[in-house]
Length: 385
Ligand code: NAP
Image (cartoon, rainbow, N blue to C red):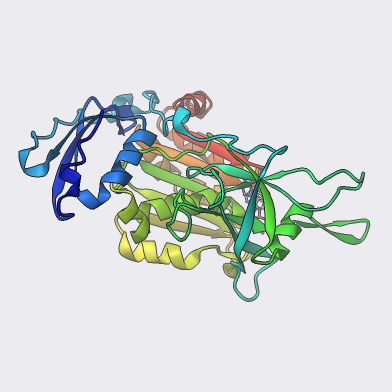
């Protein structure tokens, strides 16, 4: 629909009510929903409606708006576990492959700093690229490709490596023109020699001002549901925190909340994070701030493998935390508004399945049957390497 700009020229203090059809709420598409916003947030809200595939039916000054539609009744626990019928963000509106390897975007490095504290194991850096020269944009949960400079052992140009994006669509400076990554330098021993990963070393060593070939974005597996009341359980090992850092910023960062009038998260977000040592915790200060500012909405559980012990006396891994809180996690999953995201080491998957099987069994349910249903309903999101 067209919107008259006559009203928009008036004072920013005025409030408007938008009636929108087809937005997602509680995982289902709502028939109609009213959003009351100040004029200053009009453009951002229209963008959000567009991104979520909604249809704008009317815009009226708030004092003349009709009363909001009655919300649909909440789903009951009885049908919830099998009523795995919700979906994530609208897939067709998510950008993919805007830049391909043959013609990549060339971005400039804006910043590159270590995320680790003194005494940490290895190197993990947060690296930000400028996107202002092109059309590379993305949403939370996607990945980009990086083509490192140089050639491989056969003399051919290096191939691209995919990295999960650690920033929100607005970028760390909220100007919609940057993308950030969280990269661990890969190192392993071969024939008594330390081998450094080609791309991860290229990225960890890169200086601000350098130019980098970027492809993508790609990926629709890890999209965040647009439902502001969703529950989001996040299971991350190490740099698998990247998409979760983006989700949590979108949910709780004050600048993000101001930018996203249509996404004022008020569900429960539970991060279960695995790292080897305390100095290896990533984005810890941000997460502590969210705990302080949103104690009713954010929960944070750590598995610090080389400092904490699991009940059998072994290293504490995130699957041990999932087992410890199995009933609670399972009860949350029975709510159709709950999504689970897993990112990081593939090795965590069997342990998490085992913990979930036990919790399901205790309720007379079969996890092997339930998990594919959750997956089909786009509530069980896995990206592990
Ligand atoms: P890291 O700092 O080494 O931490 C990983 C943590 O997981 C450590 O506490 C480690 O414990 C623990 N761990 C080791 N084996 C485990 C297992 N079988 N189950 C559960 N936890 C286990 O992590 P990192 O080097 O950043 O590695 C993260 C991994 O995620 C990499 O393989 C990376 O490629 C992958 N990744 C994937 C994506 C993606 O799929 N989109 C994105 C980012 C990263 P100990 O070392 O003490 O045993």
